[in-house]
Length: 97
Image (tube, rainbow, N blue to C red; front, side, top):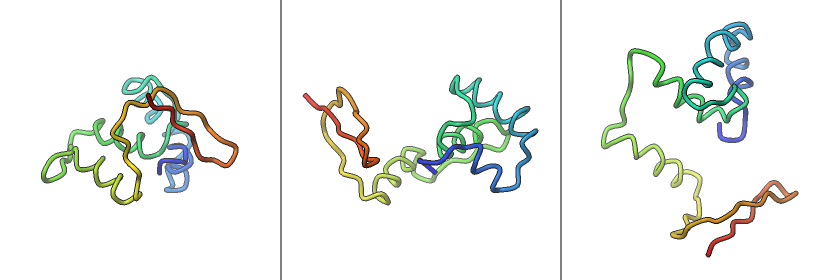
């Protein structure tokens, strides 16, 4: 969900292009100033806030981020990142102070 556009994920789930254009994209523009090419995860979080039945994670919504880091086996840097440079391999180089 982090590497794939929201529009592709919604189309795969059977959401019509018209609904994406007329309902989903305006929500993305209001919440993020972006279109439906944003990553599907970001779009899903944004859409969760667009409905009247909101959800919460027991223990706090902050657990979503920590859960993603744990699941991804991410190497969490305890440093400020000054820049991110994409590499041809599909990975990135981070510049820290």
